[in-house]
Amino acid sequence: MGSRLKTRKVRCPICGKKALWEGNPFRPFCSERCKLIDLGSWLKEDYRLTTGPEGVEELHFPEEEKKE
Ligand SMILES: [Zn+2]
Image (cartoon, rainbow, N blue to C red):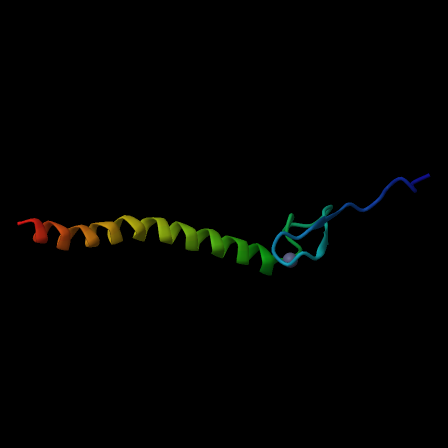
């Protein structure tokens, strides 16, 4: 009895290490560090999206000047 109680493990998407699923506050990551790395990459992509349209506008200015 009780032998069926297995600890589930999950592979951390950041570093690939096996991390405990049960009782792991950072799942699916192995640690707080990997969770923060994932959060940081999300913030970086969000930053790129907000700076993207600005770059397009900057390219538009010289083109309009050439037409006139
Ligand atoms: Zn990890």
